[in-house]
Structures are given as structure tokens and as C-alpha cells.
Image (cartoon, rainbow, N blue to C red; front, top):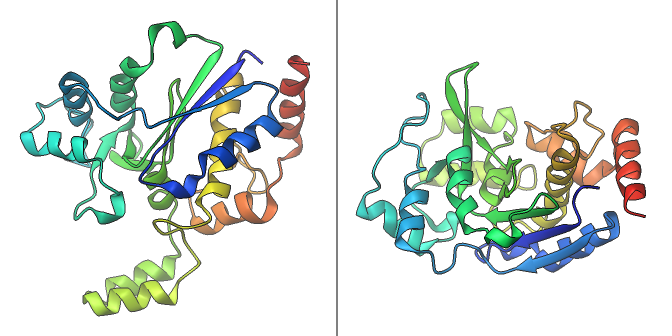
Length: 258
């Protein structure tokens, strides 16, 4: 493996990711040093806060356009509120966000053999030229890698019938009834299943960094890029295996460091 050390950065508003549990999982999976650190966004300078605020998306159907953040935008960054408590979902361009937070990595640790994986409750998105709109993403596979806990919840789609039910019921009471009807069929904020599902995104991030190969097309592989919550549950909770190809790649990576 070209990676000799992986550093995980916590997201305190989402304790369900269970950082120490994930450290143990990675230690048992890869023959590299695993370190955990506190949230990287604590005590941000005004300059970095402005750069992160400047990554916000205001039009889902247009490519990213740079803008000067408002005082309200900066307040959102400084508060770093639990996403489930916000009245409005804030969206960020994933690649612009990556460029902004790269500055937070110390120069002496910005090395090829050290992979930084940052958990954030910010909803990262990327613009798709095929349909000219932004899509929510759970993973921005770069170094530092970004894993959006909100993206894990919001990016994979819920059951089709759930959306059809919502389209014909707009009252707050009806919405709550519909959510209750589909309880367990999709992730919710502060869901106890988040940590186990996050294992899969960590595997995807690390293997992508090592091989340059993004995701897997097979639903029965932990590297599968699930577009539906039901597929996410299958690959990360029920099946929890690699396809033959990616199991061989994992074995090869392990042997390289032995």
C-alpha cells in the first residue's frame, strides 16, 4: 500500500459514527497506522470560514459560481449545527469544499502516504453534466477524503412509494404518518446503523485512493455505489462482502505491507 497512515477526523454532531469503532475496524482490515482526531472545523479562522461559506450552492441546475459569503453564511459555518436541527438544508460544492479544507491539513502531513478522511455533517454535492444538475454525495474521494454524514442519509433514494405518498399529502401530520409508515426502510438522522454503513464508505475511499478505481457495479460488494437506500442496506448491512475482484485487490493491498 502507498498509504502508511490514515487519519480520521471526528464530526461531534453525529456521535453515531462511533469513531473509535471505525478505527478498530480499519486496524483489523488494513496493515497501516490509524489515528483519530477531533473535528477539523473547530476554531476556524475567518479566512477559512469565508472560503467554506463560499462553497455553498444556490442553484441546483447551474454549475458552481463563486460568490462572496454573506454574514448569514458565515454564521452557519460558525454554528456548525446538527443538520437535523436546521430549518433549511445547506448544500456545498464537493470539489470546492475539498479545495477549501485542504488548507487545514498541516504542510508536514500533506504527504502521499498519509490519507486524511474528514467526517462532516455538511451536505456535499457534485454537478452532473449529463443532466445538468447537482446531486448529493456521501463521498468525495480525494485527499483529504470527505465523508458527508448527511450525504449518507440524503444521497441514496428512499423507496419510490414513499415519494409518491408525499406528493399527495402535504400536511405536517400526514408527512409524519408517512415517515412512520416507512420506518426502518431508510436512514434517519441519529440512526444507530450509520456507523456500520460508514465502514463501506471508508473502504471505498481507501481503495479508491490506492487504486484509482471508483466503486463497484455489483450490488453484492461493499464497494457498490448504492443509489437506493435498500441497496445500501443490502451491501453494507446484510451482505457485507466483497465481490471476487475487489476481495483479490484487498488481499493484494494487505500483502504489500507485510
